[in-house]
Length: 322
Image 1 (cartoon, rainbow, N blue to C red):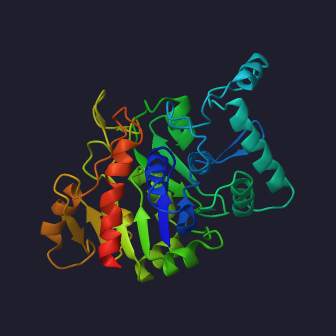
Image 2: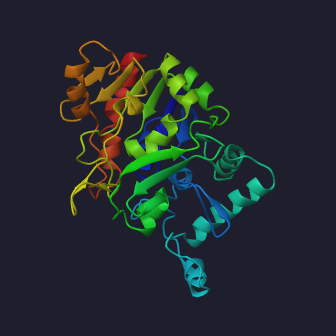
């Protein structure tokens, strides 16, 4: 079994490539819920929905989110009523949120609701939210603290970012099955998602971090830490006005302190292991900063990069390890 820790946009593209090379029955996808929000009284899980849509073949390749060929008549009507309309939910997408909200109102957990939605959509892979508890990615700016979707969608990531925190992560419990999946996996992949806002919330949950330390599985990080292309458009504005750069992140957080974690380098196909090893750490730190999978989300083509690289390289690494 392969376990993938992932966010939405970038992770969905990776999962799309992975599902074409690995049977879905062999995949367990643990998804970030730090972006979740309440919208029009509904429970919205953007990253979970992206994974559900890509595994069911419904994800819009043009937008990278939502359902392909969706319409937005409900959004337009809500705007006419004077309701907020900055978070763009399509009409078919809305059906998913209505069903999830109804299942949760009826007493199901987020994990149970996600499993029910995946089952109804004919998805064979196991999709797990990182937690049933509320964990929220909060962006501190000079104007105040924002939830991630306010920062990214409503305000178009124009604010200077002072810090990022994951509210509730310290107290959150992993969703049932998450820790067990990590501990029993043949391999665990940290997908090429934004390391701060997509992978960070998952690894901020203490029991998940501990499971990654304890698992005997090969742990592979496909994350760009070079600060060049961490994720398409998901760049943080900081420093002097007009300058764009990626927010520095804790490498120990991203590499989950796993002594057997490997970091892949696209340029040379190299594999560096044991980034948390204390020996020669000064020399290693610069190498690990460079030794990461380049994120191709800035390019227009959708699947080829993810079926060719890094999916093939990661799978080859897994096969050699096990």
